[in-house]
Image (cartoon, rainbow, N blue to C red; front, top):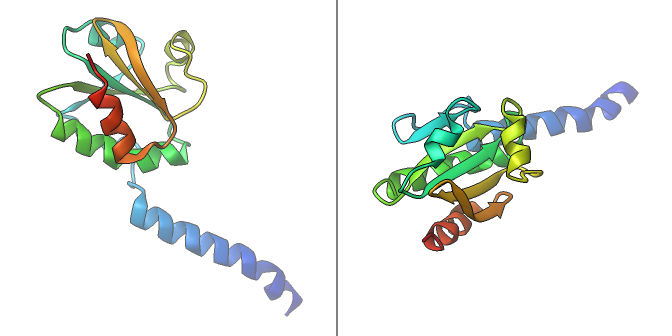
Length: 139
């Protein structure tokens, strides 16, 4: 009985976390709209941001809970603003040098690039309204 009492909080926590993940988290961290969102890396990053169209980049990691939370929001806004901006995602674990170059020390970080230069940024799980405000500040 004593073991059950000790294990109950752990079992309850895991059950709640599992249900939360099933309801609110995509099953695959790469579960994004590949037609509208470009998966960025050290090989294609500079070419992608050197555009005459504004670029919104999501700096993320697979282990980051807030990044997983923001993925559906990022997908939705990529579709909504497809004619206005291009969108890309950069895994900071795979491309650490780019994250350091643009002072990304907390994730998720969203940076708007215009003609190769960062012009606006938002840090954290800012939600749909926060990203829309960021997009609204574009040149």
